[in-house]
Length: 566
Image (cartoon, rainbow, N blue to C red; front, side, top):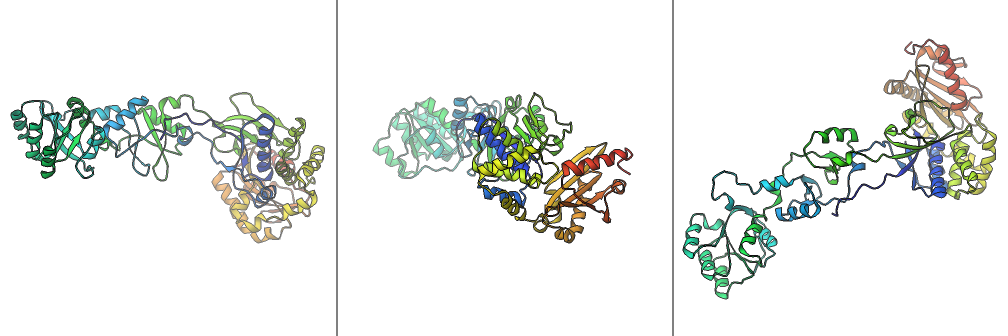
């Protein structure tokens, strides 16, 4: 792994409302393209809901990939952590890990296993405690080492002329330096089990021979000296491994101590954050922790993704957003209130709960679709969208205006659609027929999916309302699915804590609709449209949720007592 680098700059996401319809998806694609074409901004289209069958057909026809699914833009551990982090492996030695920490100025470092999973987060203090005497006053405490032949060989940058590979078996051993006479060295050796003693000696053949004949665990020859043929043969005879190193005896003794495996310094008592941990939880936990660095791990397999320091939490980069086809947090992607909203492009009424920290570009036009507005911006800049973009924008306009037949249609829509159709190379009437024939939401989806496919929540005069809409070629499928759709609306009332939920099923062949309701009996009884049966109303000439149904329901609840619980 390479050195820690700051997290990449947050992308600019262009995103529509929850449960996006075709206009929300297509205007996001179109405006992201416009920002790239006109300003060079690295804008990316996104969505916070599944594609409808018809929207998927449009993208296929245009040859455009589906926008990335983004359901939450709140900062999380995964979005703010440093990636490409330097980490140590559990097989490494103290010396290797310590050198990494000193080289890069780290006070702590993540340690991972062979699969990249976190196994420890040692600090410099943890490493120092590996070499602290366990018992005060114990003169031999500093002689105790824990290492292997392979670790010592690596730490000493040595040679191993033993006719075999160095063992990686870690053992508890005794370190002894031959700095005294032969007799004193022999006496010291006799104080310990010989098979546990690692003997360090320079160019002193008589001491080398003594250590071998007494079956020391290992002989380390320091100072770049070699052993003669007689000593080498004697070592092989007694199975005493020999390590040759260029370091002097004092340095070699330190390096052998430092060849202890880092695994001995690891413990599981450290704070780590899963990738999806929200920023607020990270700040609260990190504030009370003494840890200098916090690993971020995959929520599934525990593998290391990155690290976070406390300084990273001071000024966390926010997700940059452009909201299209809506202008309120109730319909926005989760976490939009914690994001950096730069622009809002919409054609709906202003609902009042959208607040930003800084002034933003806010474009709200009384036209039939947000795709119309995006096309207008292309024309104002004397630019032409690419063919694929033009097809998407035309589809968004056709969808929201029912091919210019909806009461929301304006002269601007009528002017823009032929321009987009020409650029996209489409026949509007044939494209419209193919678009609406691409799939029936009622035929292809179960009741809950149909209700959620294009559902918006509103608050009016203290009432919380949920209005879903789907367009169908005829109403035959509605009558087949009526019970399932009603059950889904009841579920919306319960789960979303709204007072009233309804589904507007529009027959695009007749430009009429059916309204299915659930929730407040008080509100349902106040609806003046013809009732076909309990909870089902006939809405002749009503095709627009924005222009017709919602304003009507707004007037109804305005006349009711300000107690939506009745």
